[in-house]
Length: 134
Image 1 (tube, one colour):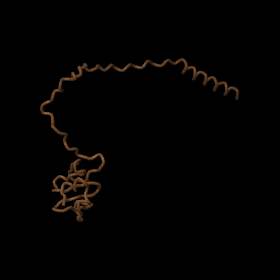
Image 2 (image 1 turned 180 degrees about the vertical axis):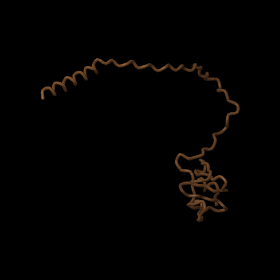
Image 3 (image 1 turned 135 degrees about the vertical axis):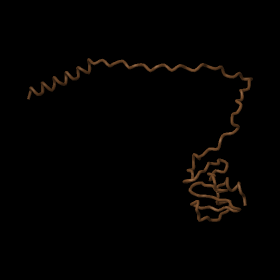
Image 4 (image 1 turned 30 degrees about the horizontal axis):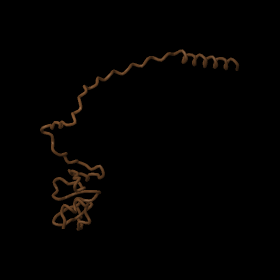
């Protein structure tokens, strides 16, 4: 019994002494990234140069951060109207699982294939109500 304890203790001491004697390898340093040349800030009284050919306005976003696009079919988000405009469908819009259509009056449906229910400007998103007021 004492022999087993001695062998175990000796193995433990030798194993731990190897950790104490082991010296870690130095870590390679990361390469330095060259910095960009510094440009002088524009002087306060001097106007900034205008880049010719730059677009005058931002392109329309394809999607909304708050509302999911309609399933299937191509569409784009119109931030002024607050709805998706369906492409290839005249005066047809989508927001929050509901389609809206203008054909002289407002109708809505939960599917693009209908059935379509009549409504007034109070039953459509505010941007659409302002677009075609009855």
